Length: 216
Image (cartoon, rainbow, N blue to C red; front, side):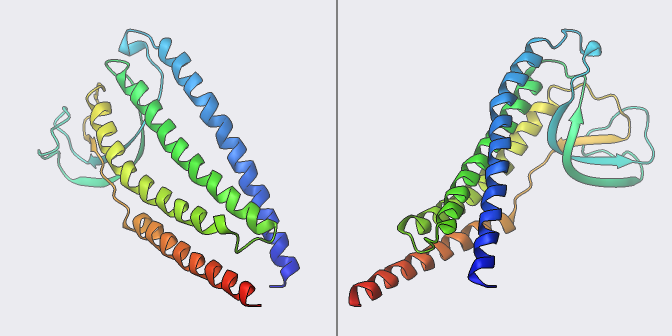
């Protein structure tokens, strides 16, 4: 790839990151307002509620049931499928599930915005042709720390949030079991560590470049 093509690609990525950052910044500002407005207007009667509450949960679906939802340790018949992911819940007993779900989504969004902001500054430096600028190694290291932070915090929040959500929900679907999920990403931890190592390599390269310039 020629230097001109590389500069164009870097500029395109920088513009894309700017758009994504502005969009999610707007979401981060509007989301708490929406959560508060909806939360303050949730009906007292659970049967009158039609507010979807999103949570990361594990689930099992069975082919045969006895008419009642069994505990996680009991048998419901033949297991059709199981997995974990984002689940929409409704008819909660109280309002706690709504507030917890909204708060956790905001936390994840803020961590994402922080990492995206650092990445934008890194690409802004690359766009100006300052690949060996002093701050780039520190920015790369901080991006690695964001990866580590997110992949360390997310499983805990998912599990704690799942327990709170399930404690606040009225479940009347025979054959379906929901329970808290704990999804630890080895790949995310490895990616964070790899970025930190690359940041150290870049720091050494910057130091060698400075020594070379002083020698000349």
